Amino acid sequence: MITILRTMALMAILVSALAHAQVTVVANTNQELMVSSPDPTLAANKRLVYDFWREVFEGGHMERAEKYLTESYIQHNPNVPTGRAAFVAFFSKFAKAKPIEAHIKAPLVTMTAEGDIVILSFVRENSDPKDNAHKYTTTWFDMFRIEGGKIAEHWDPATKQ
Image (cartoon, rainbow, N blue to C red; front, top):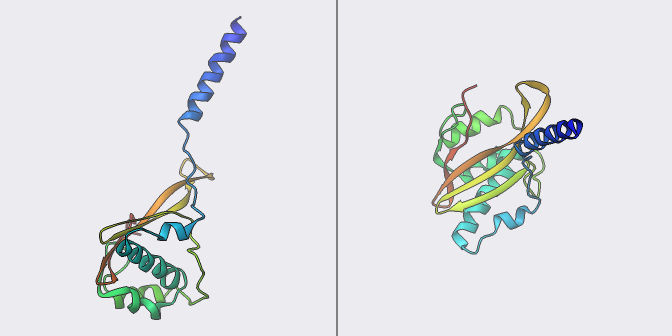
């Protein structure tokens, strides 16, 4: 009887630990559905951000930045300067133009639009600080404000590097 009680207690502890474990963040494979909206303005805003991400950010086509960013583009990431010209100068150091993909390559979880704001949420995989051999997932976001059919402002959770 004691063995059964000990086994049951051990199982309860294991189940309790598993119930509190993180659920892995998973990308959504239907990106076209995320870009759509019954509201034509929201759909256009989503498409603008989606295409900017594919063409300029992931594709490295800095020559297309003028199509997507206002000249006075405001950057809230503390590692990237403000202004379209400054954005291009900064990312031109790292980005090399490559073929533009039909979909965003980064693991996109969701895309949300409300008014003039569009948010992209991505899966982000990090090393566990207690054990670098283990990984965990979390969510990263990029938020954009649209003004006059172009991206006027950007936020993300980046900290100074």
